[in-house]
Image (tube, rainbow, N blue to C red):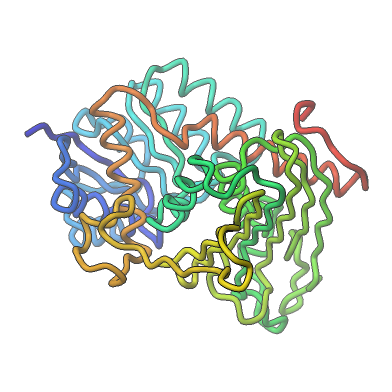
Length: 367
C-alpha cells in the first residue's frame, strides 16, 4: 500500500480538523494512498511540539519553510491565516509538492491569480478547502440538479449566516480588523462556492455591504458585518446571496433554496443530513416538499455509517475532502475545487466590493 508524507501548516481549529481527517481517511475510505503524518507547523516551537504529540506527527517546527523543505513532506495542507497562504503555496509548488489550501485562496484576487498560475505551472495537485459542499446531502442536491429532476433553475437564494459577532458589546479582535478578515473574506467564500457549484457561473452582480457595529470595546471595526448580493447566472437564472456574522440566532446558516421549472430543493446546514425536495408532479392536492434523510445510498455516506438517517457530521466533511485530495494525487489529476475554482470565488468577492463602492452592477468578465 502506497504512502505519502503529509505536512500541515497550522494547529488551530482547521489544523486539528485536517490532522484528524488525515489520520482517519485511510480507515474510513480504504484509500489506495495512505497519509503519513510527517510534520506540523505552528507559531511557536513548544506549541508545535505539543500539537505533534497530540495529533501524531513525527516532527514539528515553528518555521513553515522548514516544513516545505522537508523531503519527507510530499504534500501539505495550508490551514494557517489567509495572509500566509500565498507565500507557502508558491514555495511548495516550487519544490514540486501538492497543496490543499484552506479557503479563501489568498488575501485577494491578485494573490489568488498568482497562486493559480504557480499551481498550474508546477504540474502539482492543487485543491481548495470548501468543505460544506461535500456533505452527502449537498452532493445529493447537485446530483438532482445535474439529472434535470427539478428542470431548469430559475432562481437560487442562498445564505451563510452565523451570530458569533451578533453581540455588539463583544470586544474587537483580529476578526474585526482588515477587509480580508471580515464577513466578505471569511464567510462569503463558502456560499459563493455553493452557488457556483449548484447553479453554475455568475455573470453579473450588484452588492450592498455594511459594517453594522462601527466599534467594539473602543476599537474601530475596519471590515464588514454583512452583505447582500443580487446576481445573474450564465444560465439566465436569478440569484440572491446573503452573508452575515451578526445574524442573531443563526449558528451555521449555510442554506439554500433552488427553484426550477419542474421542482425545487431546500437545504440548511443546521440540519445537514436532510434535503427537502419538491416535485411538480401528480394532483395538486398531493404535492408537497418531501424530506429526504441521507443514508448509505447517497454520496460518501456509507463509509461512515450503514444506518440511514443516523447522519454524518462536520469532521466527516473534512475526511471526505482528504479522500478527494489523496485520490487526486494518486490519479495524477487535480479535482474540484481546484485553485482556479478558488480564484473564481475571489473574483466574485472582488466584484462585490467594486459594485458596493461604485453603487452599480458589475460584469464578472471584466474583473
